[in-house]
Every structure is written in structure tokens, then in C-alpha cells.
Length: 360
Ligand code: BMA
Image 1 (cartoon, rainbow, N blue to C red):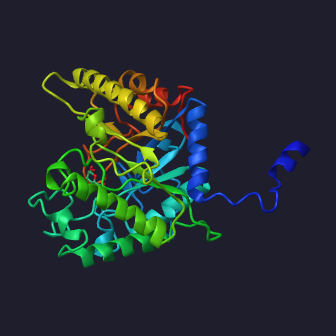
Image 2: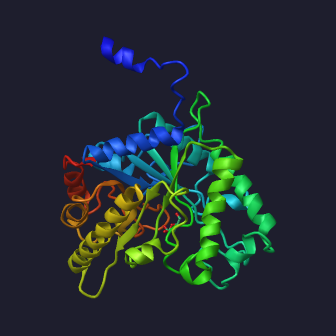
Image 3: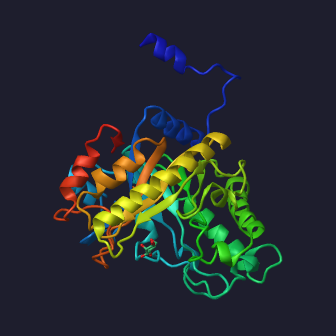
């Protein structure tokens, strides 16, 4: 005890208080060093298959489909900011922003880790994030572009929102931000065929520069997350730089094909392993932590997917966490985690009981 106390006393003048981002990185690194993989679920505390939190002040954020099934919360909570840039009260999935803030606070207070994604609308056309009708959207928001002012407003709104992510003592909560994700595909307006490598890199770097430098937010870890379907070279093609990325992420889903769920699971396992192989190598080369930033099998039609497909594919790789996508209450087949009564519930429980899988 005494030794521990001595070790904790800072030597005046020699130690600077670590930033929130540094503390979070230490925590993630320690978890990877222990050989565990944290389980994450998108929007876990804000809604589930049959319910939704709409009243930020009146809710204790104790409900979770995952907890209802296995008794524990996910260690990582993903939250979504799409349409924050419109200035309304709710995100693109109908979640009020004050609910998002409170969920982040509660999850952090319980010892969990928070990560934010963002599907902003197309700044040029006014369409959704999936509006890929113009290859000039990214160009339009960069320096000299016609939508530059709009983009600067978006950045300010993002910064103002992130400023609400604080503990009750007013300390900024450390979190992972994963903007401009899946850019190796061409389904978002910032995707591969919609802008040049230089433009993408500038977009990522500017976003970080604004939040980290202009707004001084030293509580954010920055995650880069291409989609499966690329090789190591494709993964690195639009790398924004070792100085602006903290975590190398990777999004990879299972998709049902003509041969049914088992074949889809098998195929998923094979390409996930192959991809994690080179992401692990790139992580070592660049000195970065790696993670499975999004994964899942919509409706989980293979009831053994958790233990027979996902687990064997990830268990030999040093990923910090594996985050499955959301359980949409307004779109019943759109679920990626179990809920009481879902066909995969028992299998999910068995997955969380592996020693290597960490829940909260
Ligand atoms: C997508 C889908 C959409 C959703 C978006 C942001 O992958 O789940 O329905 O609007 O993520 O959460």
C-alpha cells in the first residue's frame, strides 16, 4: 500500500498531467497487452430492438439489449452524430443529442469507453451521407470551395457538441472519434471515387486540426477506418498521416448470399482473418493500436455466428475492441446484437463468456 502511495505522488516539476487522450490510449494499450478484446455495440444505451430513450433528464440509461441478454453492458459504446450539422435536436436515427450526451456520460461513469461516428449530409447537394451524385462535394468544402463556410460552421457545431461530453465535474471525457469512415468504398460522398487522395487526406487532417488544435480538445483519439475489400496497399492509400491517426480501425460485415447464413459466416471469417492479418502488420509498422471498428451480420441469421464465426476470426489478433452495429427499433430486421428472444441470444452469451472477451 505504502509503495503504491509513493508511486502515485507526482514529483513536482517532472510530471505533467496526462491528457484525456493519453489516459484513454494507456487504458486501451493495457487491455490489448492483457490479451483481451472488448465488446462494443452501437447505440447500446439509447435504444434497442423494441425501445428507445427520448427523455435525457428522466432516464437512468440502465437499459441495454446486450445487458438484458447476458447481464453485462458492452465495454465500448458507439454513438452517432449524423445530422448534428443540420442544427436540429435529433440525429439521423431519431436520437436526441442530449440523450447522446447523457449516454456518453453514464457509460464513462460506469467505466466504459465511448466512440463517435458521423454520417453527415452531403454539403453540396443537401442529400444524405449516401448521396454520391456528385464528385465535387469534398472539393466544395476544402479551402477555396463554394461550401467552405458551411463546412466551417459544421466544424464549429461538432466542436460545440463535443464540448458537452464532460463529467459532472466538468472534465472532458476521453473518447474515440472515427470520422470519414469506410472511405475506401464509394457509398458515402467522401468515398474513393468521389474525391482524390489529396482531398481526402486534407479533409481528415483539417477535421483533426480544428478539434485538436483550434478547439484544444486533447481528449480525443482519432480512428481511421477503411472498409474490408482492400489489401494493405489499398488500406494505406489515403492514410492521413502517422501524426493525425491514433488507431487503425477496420469495418467488416457478413452478408447473406445465395448459399445461406453458414456459408456467409464462413466467408466472413475468412476475409476478416485475412484483413486483420495485414492490419496487425501495419499497426506494428506505424506503432498504432488496431481495432475492428464496425462489424456484424444483419438479423444474425446464423445462430452460432458469435462463437463460430466472429470469435475464431478475431481471437488471434491484438484488436482493442470489436463493435457490432445498431439494433434499430424502427426497422426490426436491422439488428446486429441480440435482444431477449433473438435466435442468437444463447450463443452471444457463450461468446461473452470467453475469457478473452471483455464486457463492462
Ligand atoms: C447505417 C445504418 C443507417 C443509419 C446509419 C447511422 O449503417 O444503420 O440506418 O442511419 O448507419 O447510424
